[in-house]
Image (cartoon, rainbow, N blue to C red; front, side):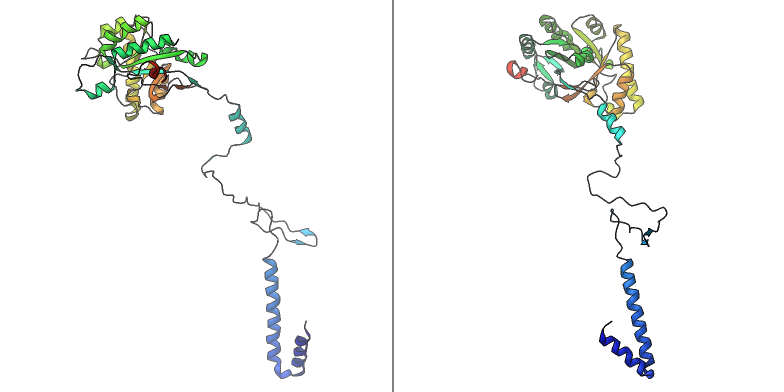
Length: 320
């Protein structure tokens, strides 16, 4: 305590009339002492998390805080709050799972193959490969050493990874497949898979039932399903999708007396439900309209395809 402060206290004791001043002084001292104690209590050392006070120690013995756990420090990161924590065992399990390989397997997609005689139907023209160009494509495949396969062969091809394999597919089951395509397939010894819309059979511009029965006996042709009515499978109810996918398979197999093992999604439209239904009905492979020639070995029910159009020679081979 300073000399000046001590002197004032002596004066107060010498003048009892100033007792009120003494009381005020005592109160000031008490308040100052309380403030120092408060400051000490609120400036205790923090624990390593920076969030809770360390236990107060007296006489080298720490007072135990019951049921108090240190909080984890908040760290900003890119992990969503909804993300599940991956434990060590789960991480090891994920790492031990065999990863799917992507392999190169070109699957060509055709619709009409014919000689264009009218320019009025632009949609048909956009889906047409001229017959003469199609023949040049078949020649190019043979000269380049490609071997053709059916879509039904895909599961095995995904295992064997034949680098010279190629697959030709023809959607919708148009009549020109019987009149124009098949004679060329036989001439150049190239296989082709045709996808048939069941209710389109025996209607204008489409295959007849009798033609389909004949094609089912041709060693260069595979017949696959393209549903009953060609609906957008991603836009209909699962029960309707089951009918379109399952019943078309059953009806075609009854008609041609031969297994129908592969499927083509109408418009290329699909979702998880329709893909599962395709698997449930026993199809071993399915083609989409997703572009490209790279295929996932673990998913033969979502095959990518290429649109060759009227490309020929080097430009055609460059697509594969």
